[in-house]
Image 1: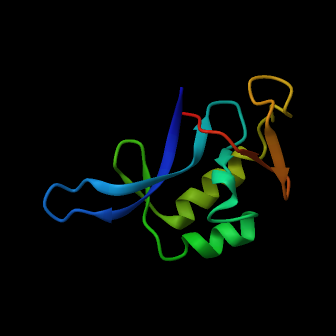
Image 2: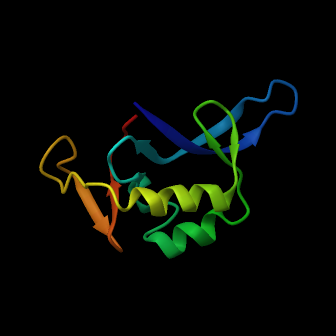
Image 3: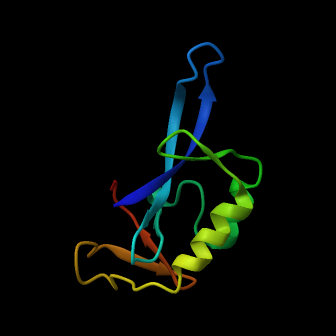
Length: 107
């Protein structure tokens, strides 16, 4: 069981649907946070990601807003968990600044 996190852009004021959803990654029990690299379109490392996220609203898959502080605290806590290391399900794992990134779509 896990929870996905997103940035939603161009949200319709009437129906509240987003024109674009950017998957940030997933928090799964017992594992490090798995970031979605998104082909490097928005960020290349954690510092760039933090800067890119600064003025954006983070939401979990249930549509609940997650503060930047809570998001990064959760990511830091998850760093203590085990990493797949690229040998299991996530063979295309990229380790950047000691964080796990996956450069394919996943849920």
